[in-house]
Image (cartoon, rainbow, N blue to C red; front, side, top):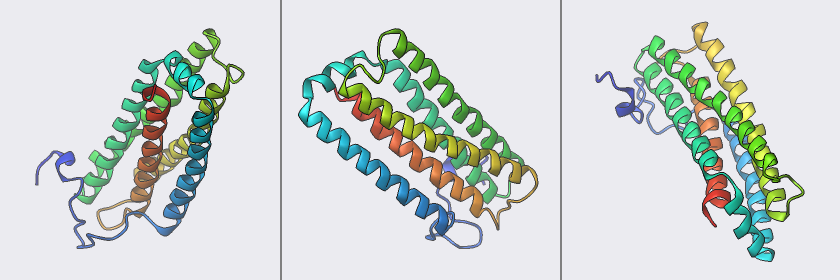
Length: 201
């Protein structure tokens, strides 16, 4: 088998369980709740944008596209590493899986750090929650996403601790799959936020 886990991320599990839902039912209930919550928030975004189109156009031009792009790269890279952690444990490569999970954690931790720097930049340029409807919606959505990202980071820490303790194997790694599923869902939501606030000018 190839040493490159990225090539085999979608390989079926060794126990012939391809086609099953990864993780567990509990995590998918949580993911569905997360999606419903953000669907409501995105609906608020569209209502506000429809009523204040000029404010949204001008507001997007004031945000740091560099910061938004960097956060996007961090989220995608972290998700990739966690996917590789799942792929390598399926291949019974426990040490490689732990290394991928640790890399995913470090990249995930860089997200709130980058966001904090961006917020400081925003405040230095007069961009706060009182700067208009666009920025009120922007902060509300991004802070909500940050909360979900923190939960995901705590999940990565928990999964890493269990992984180091030998909890996961090629035959039993539902917890790691559940973490990956949640983190990918949080990643998808950020991609939508990035598009709505940083790209759609």
